[in-house]
Picture: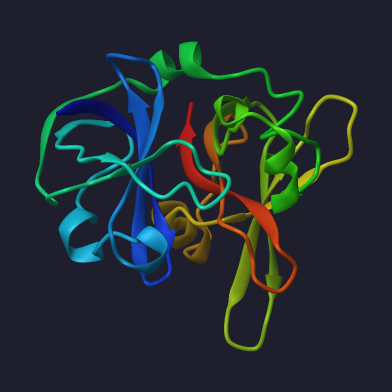
Length: 206
């Protein structure tokens, strides 16, 4: 069993991806299934909210997809909510945001991870941003939202958003605070260019 605080319940290939920090080890866990791509069934996990502390059964290491060392197989899709964490308590878990997931770019070539020992791989990071903004591009049938992160003196970093709650609020033209804690996740390699793209998988306002 593991006791994690949920920091992402995001869209993933017509399913969901759950990720959080194990409160007993302070290590990240990304829960994946044996389904192709590791997606979790939406109907079984959609009621897990960011900041929920849940108790879950973890069946062991799952495929790391060449870049995701935090992946753990969720053997049975049972879980139990035991409490909630306060937003401000997460500040202790935020990492230095001068570099987000290995570099200053929106993606990482999968080959990069072959140059690192596996214990140095990182595909999840909790970041505190005090001046984040949310922008969109209008397409014929939808809006495409991105979060704009500002990392010290480097150029702004625009990342796609996969947090269902924030996407719904943006669609409803709700104002989102500039002061947020965000979960940045590294996706599996995109077949067209063999790069792993960073996404904002969870947003917590302060």
